[in-house]
Image 1 (cartoon, rainbow, N blue to C red):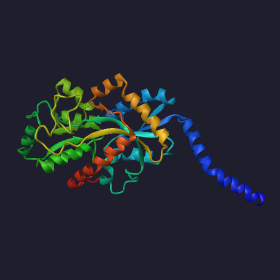
Image 2 (image 1 turned 135 degrees about the vertical axis):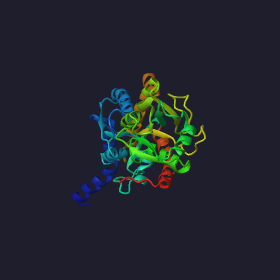
Image 3 (image 1 turned 90 degrees about the vertical axis):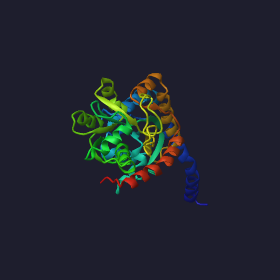
Image 4 (image 1 turned 60 degrees about the horizontal axis):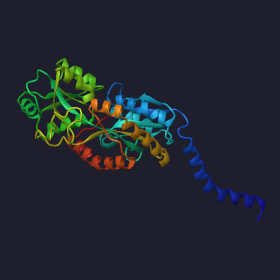
Length: 327
C-alpha cells in the first residue's frame, strides 16, 4: 500500500472516533459564554417575571450570566423564529407560553418554522392560569351571571386579550361558539393595556393572568369571574373554574416552558434542565411564582415533549372550529 493511501486509511479510521471526542470536549466546556434567554413577549408580564427569577438562580449554577432578551411580536412567533435559527449549542433558549408551540402552526398560514421539529424541549417552568375579569361595578359576579347578562345586552361583548390567536382569544371563541355568547375580540399589546382599557370603561371584560390583575382584584377595582384550565389557580383558590361553574370547553391547560433550537446535545439539555429544576425548587422562587398565580412545575424534557404531543391536537381542533387565523 502506498504512503498516501495509508494516510487516507488512517484518517478514515480515525474520523468516527474523533467526532464524538470533539463533541464531548465542546460539551465539557459548556457554557463557554453568556447565554441568551429570549422572551418572545414584551417586558412586564408574567413571562418576564418568571424568566428573571430563573435567570438569577441559574446563572451561578451554569457559571455564565443569562442575558434576558425581549423579542415580542406575533403572539410569540417572532422571538421563537430567532431561537429556531440559533446554533444548537445551548447558548440560546427561550421561555414562552404553550401556544407558541401548540397553536402557532394552526394559526399562521406561513409560519417560518415548524413547531414540532424546530425546537428542543428543555423543561416545564410553570402551570399558568387565565381568568376572565370584569370591573367592580359590572352587574354579574361569576361565569353564569356573565353569560346570562351578555345574551341580553343587545350587542357583542367587547373582550380584551394580549393578542390575536392567544389562548385568551381562543377561550373567548369557545364562549362565543359553544355557549352562544355574542363576543367581539379586542386585541392589545399586552395584558396591562387591556386591563387599563377595561377600567376606563372602553371594553366590557378582559382575560388576564393573575400577575397582571391580582393587585386590581385586591384593591377592589376588578373582580374575577372564572378561571380557565383543569383546576383552580394556586394564588386564587377561591375562584372557581369555568368547568366547575357549568361552562364546558375552557379546561385546556396553559403552561410556560423553556425550549432551545433543535439539535442541542442531550448532555447540554440535561445540564440546563437540572439548573432550571433546581431554580424552581428554591423556596423563595416558589413563593414568588405562587404569588403571581403560577404553579412551579419542574420536570424532564421528555415529560414536556409528551405533554405537547398530547395537547397540540386539542388546541388545533379549537382553532379550526373557531376559524381563527393570523396573518
